[in-house]
Image: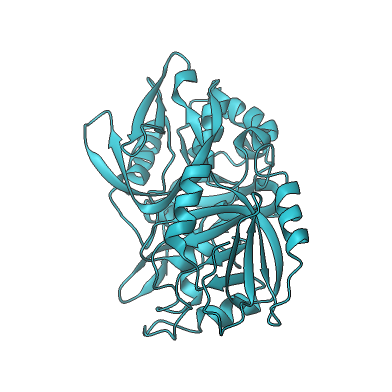
Length: 387
């Protein structure tokens, strides 16, 4: 029973794993309970972007980097309106921010937005457990009085159904269509509005990060975002030059029940298609491939990926617990990228058409920018078709 607090300090938060393991710590944010899958993220920066990334729905994030909270939070760095990750686990209690962009502290931000944090945890030990046993189901509880019903928490963790078979895209997608014209952040102007963009792109929102939409706008795209449940007819009615499939959470096979028919309809046209993360998996399913649940997934900003078409290695940002099974790719669909950590699939393309996707996040910010060229490739394909 790992304990991270000294004997004289009463724990106010607790992580209960489905196998009965207990990790005690100091709670922050808003008191309460949540049940989710536990994953670890190796990024050294970007905790606010991670917590607001819709792909983390249904997950509690363990940060392996200890200095979480030292840059505070600010509205510009949100990837969506509110935190989506169910909670966060850190080694050291969040400190006061020392960054000129900070608008409030991480603790205040979590409390206002109803998310639980737990500090003082041996995150190395917890991460090893995740790697060895797979991403576990956990109950995370925070009670300032330090009183917990341990048996009930362990039972809740054991009874949680998990992410397999769970469609979460419908929970994080937009409720109605909207236009997007904000470009990537640049010093000293910040976020500028795009003007004169002539490439009409329909972006399907399975849980889209804002910076993906900014990258599309910066590449010359006039972006209209549609909900995850959009049909082929909804998309084609906007007469797009290309279709983008966004990131998102949950089991791709479950989301595919309604997303795959739409994508198959788009593939019957000659429109360029570009997918990221869950969008990559959706495209693969529409082409006839299958997806599989990974042991503990990929979560971090330091993942090496090899481009098999050029031999180039890119350092990428990733966040996924499911992967495309490359052994199931049909004829005419090539594997373009692979992870150098475990050889898993990280990209596909149709051999003779401008249809491609990647598992990783080329828009990630902060994080590597090795892969931004993919947005330019998408724009180039649309221009070529228009010409």
